Length: 148
Ligand SMILES: [Zn+2]
Image (cartoon, rainbow, N blue to C red):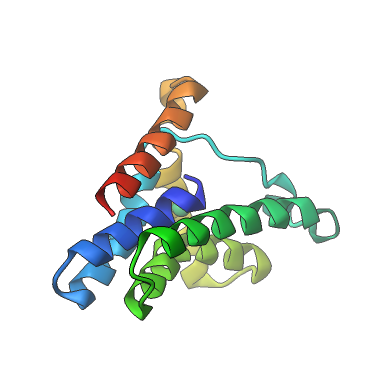
């Protein structure tokens, strides 16, 4: 899933949960939950292929994705430290995946990446059209904005 829906969902969960520790834990779990759904993603094939000298545009896409999410929460949330902690935790699993590419042969990162990939490709074998992968993300963004 794109990073913006993860960020918005994380901030929504943290802002609606009365216990901040529980809220942040649920934010982390929300990442894996959202990754289960059919999703469309922009290509970051150079990052995934560890072709670092060709990956500037891939990192630029990631940067804009995160920036868009942060911009939305700046307008839609209370902008306290809990909100920013939630935004960080909401995308942390994808950060671990990136770290796994940068730091090869780290057992913990490899275990996480295997788990993360299985969740991400849950629907891949079920031939769900890309349309639903886009709709699911727009729906998540719209719902999060509505409830924030
Ligand atoms: Zn993910």
